[in-house]
Length: 496
Image 1 (tube, rainbow, N blue to C red):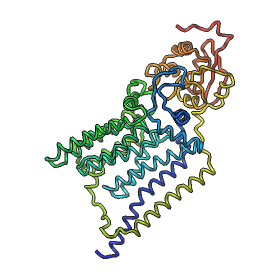
Image 2: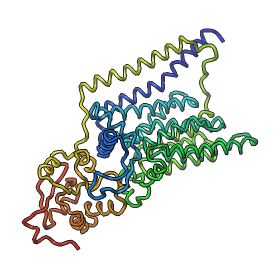
Image 3: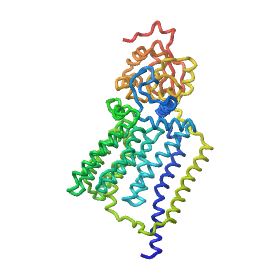
Image 4: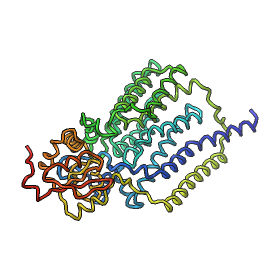
């Protein structure tokens, strides 16, 4: 091999090493630029509020103290660390803080994703998969705890799949990742669930004499991961709290992120499924049983709940990476002796320049743009009026709960559906969406409501317009307020 050819390979290898960082930087800048789209879910309000409460009190919440319908009810925060990070960033930089934090997390995920795929696939394919994964995840990329947990999910599954590809056991040094994930977000249960099928992939392809020993190592690692997931301020309550939401039954079909996938109109997810089927037929992919199970499980999860689509988007390519890589020739790696300190120095310098450019761009953009939360979730004028009237018990729309909590106003309901339970929230939706309008006066009387704050476009305000004992006092494009009408109270129809 000539010296010039070896040098050329080394340069290509060093440039290749910068690709994941370049993808991460581009992803970061994109989401900073569209940062206002990350502030579209009112849950961000109460997530930050709880994080600030934890910082102020140096304690963890064990009961509810934000609603007047469930005061003192048992409730734990399975995303406490993410909430603290969001609260701290918000206190420092207003809404720019959560935007930058969210953009950084998704950028780390994208960079790690390309890095992991690079071990098996060519760089163009890795970058293409990253772009597709981000496209599929756009609907759920919000300033909320699940995004901060995405890089940990990527690292955890990437390490497990790499061990399976090597037909070896996992390292005990990986368990702190599970502990970190459990403190960031309740989605860590996915990481626990994936240990089983990934371990079978490793065991199936191991030498026969090593299979039992390897299997027991994976079993012990799974037990260790479960114990690590309990290394939170809530201990053993953490896994239980993370799965509580799955017991909400019919209610899950009404909460957007927990709805099943809808194919009445063409979506990127539908295109991804069709593309996955086409890829399998076109390339003639032959997969092991554990890999088939992993793909089916991730697909089923995404079909059942749209919030699982990002897991499908980022994890299915990791499962397919080795089989796809084996079907195509890999570019040559740099040979020994060509990757000396000058090349590493240049790579390090290039990485620092990329990071510096990203932060400089952020500073310039922050100086010209003020990030704001979407007005659809923030009925500022309506809440100001309710505050002036000293309303105490407000029957609020589900999506307004987070904003009310941020204003220190006790709520009827908010995004913590697991706190309120299936029947409570189902009755609320049926009453305000016109499916069972007779429930509305019963709820208003049962909880001694003195004012309502409902979405202007929903059926609820029209029902209240015709309900004796109530009158509309405020309307705008976002919210409608009704209060009890003393002049009509004597003739109000009693609830049964």
